[in-house]
Amino acid sequence: MRVAVISAEAVPYSKTGGLGDVAGALPKALKQIGVDSLLITPCYWQTKGEYLWQTAIDDLWIAWRGGSHRAKAFYSNANGSPTFLIDYPPLFHRDSIYGYTEDYERFAFFNHAALALLQRIGVAPDILHLNDWHCGFAAVELASRRLYEAYWRATRSVFSIHNMAYQGGFGLDELPALGFTSDFARNSFAFNGYASAMKAGLEVSDTLSTVSRRYAYEIQTHENGYGLDWLMRQRENRLIGITNGVDYDVWNPQTDPELPAHFSIDDLAGKRECKRAMLERFSLPVDLDRPVYACVTRLTSQKGVELIRQGASDILASGGFFVALGSGEKDTENFLQALRDYAPSRVGIYIGYNEKLAHLVEAGSDIFLMPSKFEPCGLNQMYSLRYGTVPIVRAVGGLDDTVQNWDAVDGTGNGFKFGPYRADKLLEKIYEARFAYEDKETWAKIQKNGMAVDNSWENAARNYVDLYSWTMAR
Ligand code: ADP
Ligand code: GLC
Image 1 (cartoon, rainbow, N blue to C red):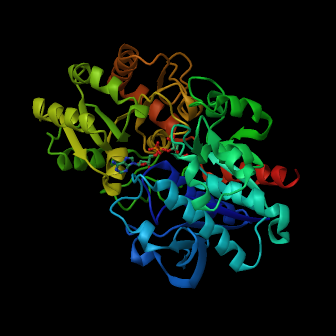
Image 2 (cartoon, rainbow, N blue to C red):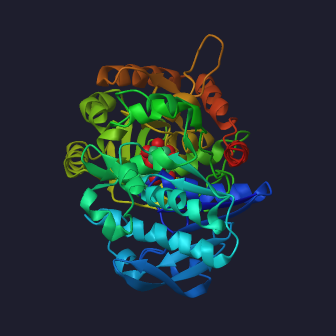
Image 3 (cartoon, protein in one colour):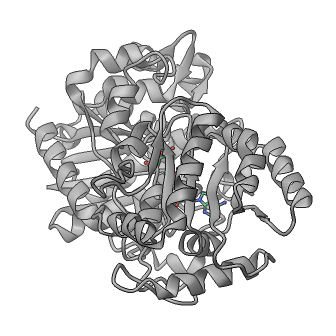
C-alpha cells in the first residue's frame, strides 16, 4: 500500500499547532508498521536548512494563473519518513506560516504542486491522505483528473478533519484563476455563495476521518458543524474518528533533552527538579509544595481562555502558581500580562511560541488546564498524562475520549473532567484537584494512572491502515 500524506505543516519542518505534530508523526508510524508512506509539505522560510537534505527536483513546473511557474522540491527524512518539501519562495517565504488574505491561493498552488510531484515520481499512490482545508483543492483535482487520466485512476482520497472551525473561504469568482473551471469543481467548492476549500474536500473525498471518536459525532451537530453538519450527517457512513497518538520519541520524560532531569512512572523524583527549573525560569519563588496550574496553548476562544480569565483570581486564591505559555488574541495576551503584574510572585507568563519551554512546562507543572469550548483531539492533555501532570479538561472531543475523571472510591481515572462551559464548573474541578493534591498517595495514584496510558502512534497508525484498506476497496 502506497500512501502520500499531504499537509500544510509537519514537525520538524514547520508547526503552528497539533496538525504539525500529527502530520510529522503519522508517516513515520506508518513506515514503522510496513506501509510505503511519504509526506509532502511546503518549505517555508521558517523551515530550518538542516532539514533540507538535498534538492530532489529542481524544475517542477506548475501551471498557474495562465503561466508556467518553476518550483523546487527538497528531500528529507528528518521526521523518520521520506518527505518532499515544495519550495516556491513567492508564496511560502513569509514572516508567518498562515494569516494572509491570499492563503487560499498559496495552498491551492501547494496542492497543484503536490500532485505534479507525485506525477513526476512516476508511481501514483493508492491513497492520497489530505489534511484540513488546505488540502481541499487536491481532493477536487484528483476527483476530476482520475476520470480521464489513467495515471490517477486507482488513487483514492482520505480527508482528515483536524478543525472544522477553519474552512478556507474565498470568492467563487477566484476559482478559474486557481485552475478550477468545471461545473463539478464549482459545485464542490460552492457554499453559501462563496467557495470553501473545506467543504470541497469533505464533499468529494472518498472517505473522511477526524481526530477523535467524540468529535466525529460532534461535527454532525449544529453546535460544532460550523455550517457543514448537514454534509457530515449526509456522509456519516464514510466518516470515522481515529484518536491522534503521541510521538513518544519526542514527548518522553525519560529521555526528553529539554529537561534538566528525567523521570518515569517508577521514579518521579526528577519531576521535582523540573518543577524547580520551571519556577526559576518564570522568576517565581521555588516553593515546591505549592501546586502549579499550567496552560500551553494558542490563545483563542476554542481553548476556553474566557473560563480561565473568569476563574483566574479564584485559581490564585486556591493557593497555586499559575503559569501560561501561549500567543494569539491580543486582549487575552494583555489580560495575562496584567495578571502577572497583579501577582508577580504567583503568576508566570511567556507570550509567544517556544517549543523548548513547552516541554519544561509539561514536565514541571502539577496540573494542566484545558477547558476548551471545543477540541477535535488535543495533544497537550496526552503529553501531560505521560509527564505526570494531571489534566483538568472539559468533556468535549478528544479531551473526553482521552481523560477519565478521577474516582476516589475505586481509585480509577487520570484527570478531572467537567461538562457545562462555565467558570464555576472549572473551579469545582480545580478545588477537587487541589484537595487530591494535598494527599501525596492519592496524587501519586492519579499521576501513575495517567503515565501508564499508552497513546502511542502505533495503534492510531493501524487504524489508519484499516481506513486506507476500506477506502481502496470502495
Ligand atoms: P491545537 O492544534 O488546536 O493548537 P493541540 O493540543 O492539538 O492543539 O496541539 C497544540 C500543539 O502546539 C502542542 O504540541 C503544544 O505543545 C503546541 N503549542 C501550542 N502553543 C504553544 C506555544 N505557545 N509554544 C510552544 N508550543 C505550543
Ligand atoms: C487541531 C485541533 C486539535 C488537534 C489537532 C491535531 O489543531 O484543534 O484539537 O489535536 O488539530 O489533530
